[in-house]
Amino acid sequence: MNVISLDPAASVYYRPMLEAAHDATMTATNENSRAIS
Image 1 (tube, rainbow, N blue to C red):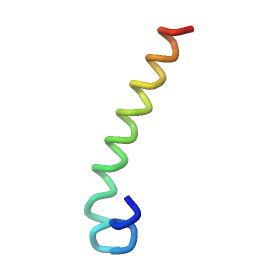
Image 2: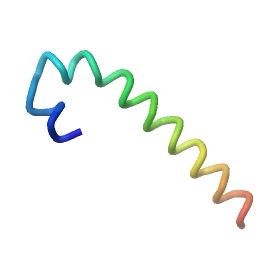
Image 3: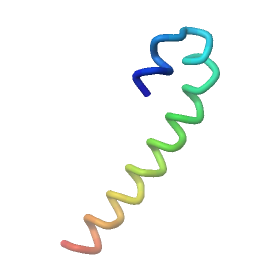
């Protein structure tokens, strides 16, 4: 992620995918938290 952030063009291109992956990770984490608690 740090490497991508150094290149503005790459950052613009990859940001949607990174955010989508981050959202998916957070959703999975939240579901796991609910299941545990």
